[in-house]
Image 1: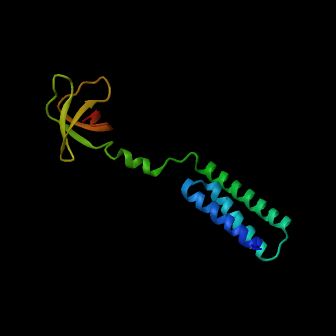
Image 2: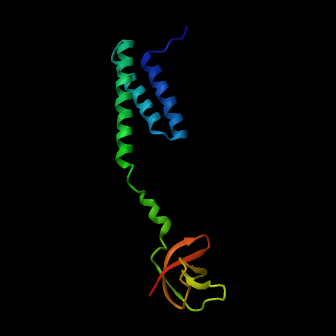
Image 3: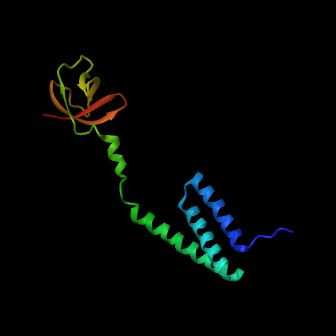
Length: 144
């Protein structure tokens, strides 16, 4: 008959959960894998099964509380990568000619772009700032 020591069993369970965490990407599965690893260490030093469960529960509770605390602390923060989605905002373009439909074709970053005003103010020739990019159109904000 084949038998596995409790430390190896906990370690195998931790590796299996860690493998699932890699595919799912949740912090809680990472906590479970860490708890199983800590329990494997406890089993390796000779703790009985009840104490192994206590170690697992303590590490799980501490890890889950840590994840909750980190999420609460970061809840109000904006993702710094969000700025990368709005690189064009605030840049200047020059409107030379406005078409009869109220749109203009401007040169920006070496390519022609269709530009339209942000509000009800009509486009007029001059220097404008880019408020945002809407699909393939530049939405122009303030005129200088």
